Length: 390
Ligand SMILES: *Cc1c(COP(=O)(O)O)cnc(C)c1O
Image (tube, rainbow, N blue to C red):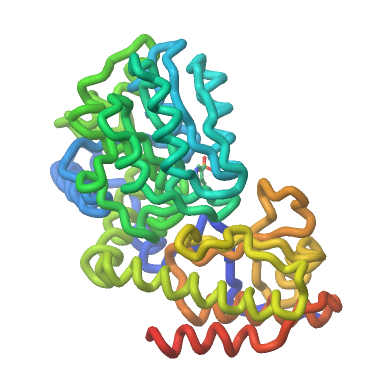
C-alpha cells in the first residue's frame, strides 16, 4: 500500500519547487531574440535582480549552475597563485575551496567544521597578513549541507581595513534570508536561479561592487568569464555571451514579480524564518524522546532559514519511506559525518506552512512505521509556531 499519489512534496534544498505560474511563463516559444520586447524584459529582470540583492552596483548573468558562478567569480578577481581565504562551514565551502585550488588559486581554509564562521578567528588570521597578500575572503552565507548560516555584517566588520574583497555565496540564501549587499559591504555576490529564486536551474548571477570591478581583468579572465562584457552590455546577446536563455528570462520575470512586487521581500524573509522555526520546533520535540536526533546547528541565531540538517537514526530508510509511501522527498545527509543517519528538510522558495506540515507529518508517520524512537507532539509544536506567527 502506498499513499504517495497526489501532489508530491519535494523538500530537497535545490532545485526547489517551481510555481506553476513560473512554469507557465516559461512555456512559450522564443520570440525574435533581436527584437525590442525581449531586450526590454531582460533589462527589467536585471533591475529586479539588483533589487533582490540590495545593490546598485554591477550584475553579470551566466548560463550555468552554482559551480559555474564560483568559477566565473574566481576568473574575474584572481591571477593564478593569488591567495584566497575560504571560511568553510560544511560541504559546500569545502567544495568551493577545492575548485579554487584546482583553478590554481592558493586557497587556504579557515575551517569551522560544520559550524558557522567565527569573525574573531577571521580577524586574527587577517592580522597576520600585514602585507595584504590575501586577495579575497570567501564565505557561503548558508552552507546548504550543514545548514550553518554566516553573519555577513560581522564578517565584514572583522575584515576591518584589510584590502581583501568579500565574496559571498548566497546560492542557498538569496530570496530566503536578508541580503543587503551594498549596506553590508559585500564585493561579490553569487546566486543561482534554482533555489530561493523559485526558477528553473541553469542560470547564475554575479553581482559585484565598484571595488571588485576595478580588480581585473586577470590572466584567468577569458571573454566568456569577463563580467565587464556582460554587466556593461547593451545588446541582449552580450549579457549572456551568446544566445540568451529566453524561457528562463520569462520565468525569472514572473518569479521576481512574485517575490518583490506581490509578496514583498520582507514578507518572503519572514515566511522563511517562521517556516524554519516550525521545523526546528518539531525536531526538538522528536529529539526530546531520542537523544540521537540532533539538529546540526545548535545556536538558533546561526541556523539557516532555508534548510534544516539533522542527525536521525535510520535517516536513509526514513527518506525512502516518506518518498515511496507518502510522496515526500527529503534531502540526503550531504556532508554529514554519517550520511546514512542524517537528512535535510528544505523550506526554501515556493513553500508554505502546509507543505512544511506535510513534510513533518510524513516524517512522523515514517518514524512510527519504521520504529525509530522519537518524542511526541512535534506537529503540535510546529502548529503552535505557525499559529503564533500567521
Ligand atoms: C547548491 C549550492 C551550490 C552549488 O550549486 P550547483 O547549482 O549545484 O552547482 C553552491 N553553494 C551553495 C551554498 C549551494 O547551496
